[in-house]
Image (tube, rainbow, N blue to C red; front, side, top):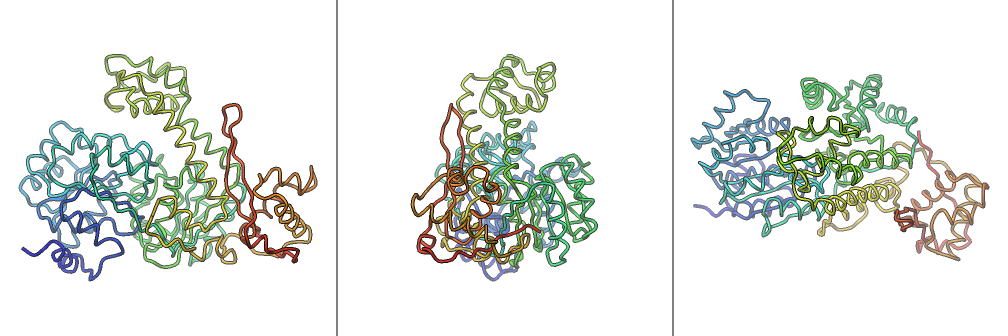
Length: 574
């Protein structure tokens, strides 16, 4: 038999029709085909699917794929069928006869790939059925869903670690597009991949121009309309914070191009139709909550717009990564303001309730399992908040069982890990704020955040920081005489006393009530864009609370500017 590396190349050409691998695919495929447990963190659109499909075929037998979304499974199976490969799927959207037949085909060894939803692993007897004929490879797609540190945690993924030993000695490959080092470690721990090879790279997407524009919420729908009026900026995805906004803006965008709303409150048939129509280019614009996007493999999305601050950089990166998968120039636009931070903190406090609420939920748990509805009834708390408290108890061992079948009281040492998770999620908001207010190249900021050690570190050249003149949402104009005076005063003050908090700098430069703070902040942002100053987030503790502020420092370029006239371009949102 030919060596695995030779069979990888032959299979790549004969089955998948590719002569060459994409960057980083080859080394991953070699490790997986060789039987090494592997953790792969590569961005959306980088070709992660091939990293289990190709090695699975080379290893022979059936590759078992655990996938969290029906649309994702259906899309992958359809593509494999086009390649004349034997693939089946088992999920809640299929009939019992179809699912039974898929099991028969699997046990008979007549499948190259079997896709299953994670909740199937809690069906009595199903894991044991899979174990009767060991798979050649187990692929865990969207593996970040297993980690409560991740941005898209799923209950049913937590049982994967318990079920995988039944399927050994098959090697396991866990794949995700977004995982910080903390999430990577948690994935490895949950799946018992302690000696796994890790491939963490490929996060740079230089064909996506990232732009952040400060704009109050009332003006954002019009900015989106003007931006997408240009046919070349469609197809597009517009992410909004709420279902109501998705419905409203989805209707408004029909004046620009055929559009539709998508969110979890819509009937499943409607959601599937929207996703299918967008995939087949019957829709040009989808206005959606974060419920939309996983499983979308549409290569020609030109624009992704966020009309509010995202909850984490992981979620943001995954969502903008849906643009430009064909490698052509695309744009990601983030419309936000400081008020968005308060909105995100409101959602954070609901998703991660106060410890007293969790203590109350813990007291309501007994030795016998009770349903979530029984526990929630007459709790005295907001139902959604109380449900979130029960979920967090379950994650951290304070509740045992399963939220869908019934919960009983668990151990009492849940408080410290919960507080750590709550603090971590709050820190993610800080990281998003730092990104939005920062003056570094946007792409370099994201690449560094995900720990891509093999990246060049060079600036992308076309984000709003690197090339403000290319901005799509903002117009350039020369600074007024007053704005130039403020800019000069800022630079002069920083030469005397560098690395200062922006609030104190504002007071010293503008005096009390002399200049509006919004004007001062706009000049600061433009000085940062001109690389004359550097802005970064900082914080201090006061009365047990973390107080965040922005620190301002002079760059070498700003220091060298001396007494020369300062001419800066200020941006005005369309």
